[in-house]
Length: 238
Length: 161
Image (cartoon, rainbow over all chains, first blue to last red):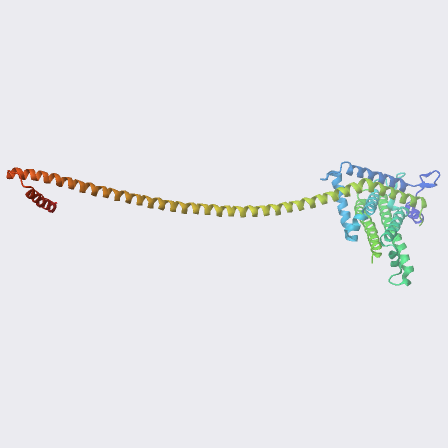
């Protein structure tokens, strides 16, 4: 019972040891990484099936995928307007798809138990990686769209606020990564505890809630990324 | 809490690889198709709108032409009727005139024939009368008497007529 909790405090996620090391690079491969690869493979297979024969009148998986795209586009448009929504769609949609599947992977039997199977978003290192991509994307797009005008928004409304503004930019990815990891890891832990106590019927409500929270966390991460990008690219235009 | 550098790097690399692949094999074809469909539908709607406008315009034009044609037709009929009327009255007039002429000519002929007949009859009657008178009197009248008698008879005959 205390095992996973104690490990979480030291590792920013479930206790884990490296499965193997890539020779030459010194990069260690953990269960989160292999699970990421499996998720990537799954997404690619779905992508392949959805685009095998792209039809003007969509059917089957293509239709499903287009419905998802329409929904995501609608969400991004509400946050950043139709033009930007289309422009940054690939980045944002990939965040959403990867995170939601990763969150839901924790509901599968064997998650966290089987060797090489650990929901990636339940580990802070993984969510931090995603947040770092958001961080660099925001500033890259901000500079690209606004140039030096983008940099001016760091000293607005007054240069005195520069440290605070800069700090805020670092707090954004920190909160993004911690929120996602904390929620998913918490769910995982709760589910593990309930499964450990009464493995029959009782965990079902928790699993149902996990479905909801898994969606909400993917939604929130993606929407916040959209809002950050939108405000950064608009900052340079004023 | 700590961050494992390997996990972090893998996370970034994995995501970027996934993004690149999906961008090329999922987003581009599907978004392209969605955009194309949107454009197609917009184009279809527009062309349908245009077609309906055009057909309305054509209908109006046809109706105007039909109205004109109807007007023209009724004008032609009216003209025909009028012409017919005129022709009829003209023919009637001519016929009447001709009939009058014939009547006149007939009357002339009749008068002439009558006069001729009367003259012939007078001559014959005179001759007969003279012959009869001669027989009654038993002798031939002198030329003067003859002439006088004839004259008297004729006058009488003329009165008797």
